[in-house]
Image 1 (cartoon, rainbow, N blue to C red):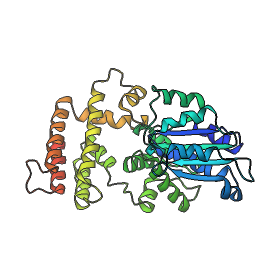
Image 2 (image 1 turned 120 degrees about the vertical axis):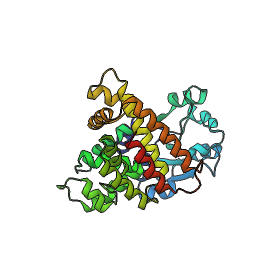
Image 3 (image 1 turned 180 degrees about the horizontal axis):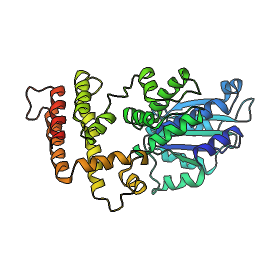
Image 4 (image 1 turned 135 degrees about the vertical axis):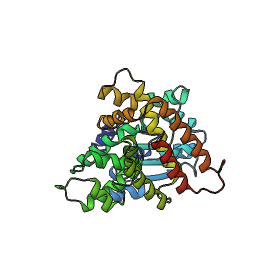
Length: 333
């Protein structure tokens, strides 16, 4: 079952005895776990019929013991296991899955990884209970996800704003929704969310971020690139050299990939670069400004300054100085 199907089954009280929520993306696992804990039983029923357990503190046998108990004054008993990835001998659960207690709903959150579906226990899970796998979104999917989330809440957001949020917050859906939820408390529904509003309310600069630095470098806009890097140099706490270089390496790597594409159409390039089609034109421009030979030298510079940032062949230059030197060398590759 997918996320919406499970939400619907909770709303309709059309329930299975066991739900196993697993995967690398904790956002949907936490959302579903909360839905089960808040919306299956009334507040009065929860007092006697809902148990929340933690994988670090219990055994699989204890889960089974709780699951086999009958509800008191309610049709259902709910056993929610959080941090199930810490359980030892979770395979013991297999015996319970053969004959689950029909009046109990067991929900196991297994975050950060998935059960190996090639092994016996993994195969049996899919056959005997509802398994939901929450996979990490690729970076190129994040802007579209932000757009859909904002739309679902009855708001609108422009492409530049989604790009800034995705670049600044990464693929952490919980962090993204937390910031968006705070923003939507102060923005009117008829007011489109823009980079200006994000800068004012969240503190993410629409002009001084890695996304804008990449654009400036791609366009070989020396003045803008130096203005941004000078800002970074004055705010190294918020713009540490390591994530900046990581972002730049990924950016120039995509430019190199673009050079070797046979089909450079927007749709094909977006798929190959794993980016939103909206941003393909930026890579087209950058590819015109940096040929393969120049990119080779840029990768050498990135490697060199990565080592220098870790103290290799560098005794005195601080990270602000390293950032300025690196950007100069990139622009003059």
